[in-house]
Image 1: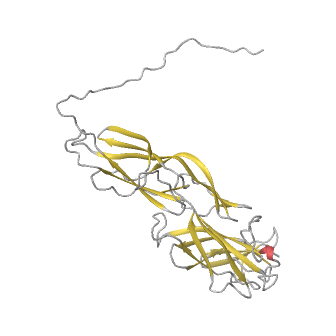
Image 2: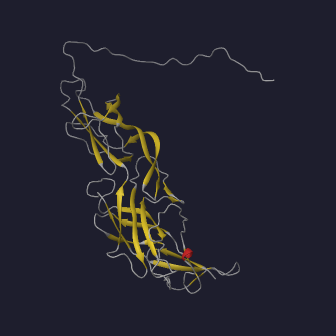
Image 3: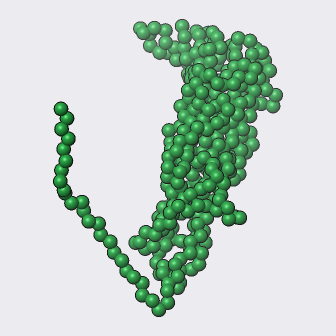
Length: 340
């Protein structure tokens, strides 16, 4: 008779199913009789400076385990449940789960995390070793990668490389610490006016950011967990949320961060709302402090500031006022194709 061990928070239930004629019953206290659980802690690199993940924020990750002295994780068969016999034992190593979900509070120092379901050391021998790695956020796991469905630039994809977990007899000295590191670059936008609106064409008008879009953006589609390499998906333009209040000579509140692939340059479009008129600036190449193209970095956060100079009103001259209309399509001769 087999039964599956499922862990839910602090409650572990053993659901037994003996045949189609028997009902599931709850029994035991959820402890495995012949295996030692793997205890893991985590820390997050750069939480002091990354806006998407800061201390105290809840994170979700998928934790993967493979047996062996130094497994390469290149051919992985996901097992999501621990399967026990009638004595709460693993019959073999293949009955153990090798994938677990984890939710924990981001911290720059190591803190223990709870795995669902629990992961166990090999039972074939007390000296048999296992290794652990982690990917955040949680995604769909197959034989080589973790895939992500969200493509709007909001995913802060992180990777904790392979760590030797030791064995049931000799766990890793000092504990198993998964060190999660950011795999994208982070862009944050702010905007301000170069000078007051008095004496400009925008005097007495409300000027605010209508939209910010990043061109040629690539977002994480999946992560190969054997080496931490991100596989990117080109999504074209990504719209940035935030910074849409009236602009002054002080920078606006920061935009919502976006996380994309690092690149040798960043090109953006900016649209302003000047009362009811939209003023657009397209194909703006972001510069660094020395006037060269800003090259973004993996694991780094970049704050990009728009400094907007209002157009100066020409003294003693009359501005040309224009309007526009669109002529509708006119019907014309029809065509036909005859196929015999």
